[in-house]
Length: 131
Image 1 (tube, helix red, strand yellow):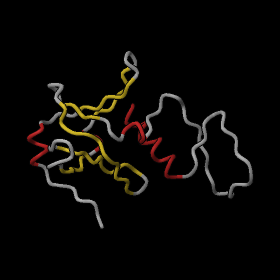
Image 2 (cartoon, rainbow, N blue to C red):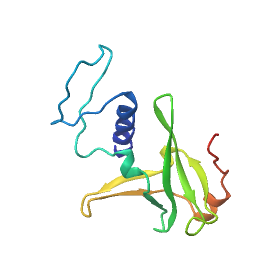
Image 3 (spheres, helix red, strand yellow):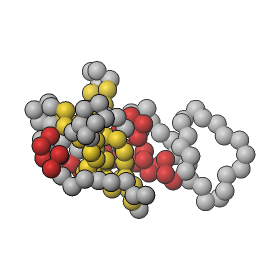
Image 4 (cartoon, one colour):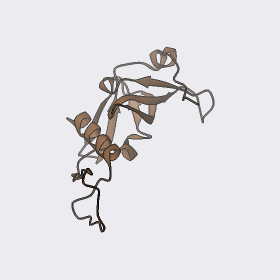
């Protein structure tokens, strides 16, 4: 359910301005503009970026650094893996369905987990940003 909320929030951002329930705008919007309301419990990309991903042994295996969007949908999460203090790190693109993102209500924070190992992610094909 959280993934659906994340995808919906990301798509709303791509489609145009997202308005909070109390927000007001002035001026005229084009007739084709579509507006949405966003609830307090939805995931935002700003909360997703920088989120550490842990595996089933509660080991940190990477960090979400970016989101790849294709045809108005999240196509991949870009993870930073390996390295120390920015040295030797590399990026891998993983399917959003392979990462479980949930909100820990008790501690009021977002958590990301994935059924993998550090070694598997280090051995995965490297993602390089297009120039």
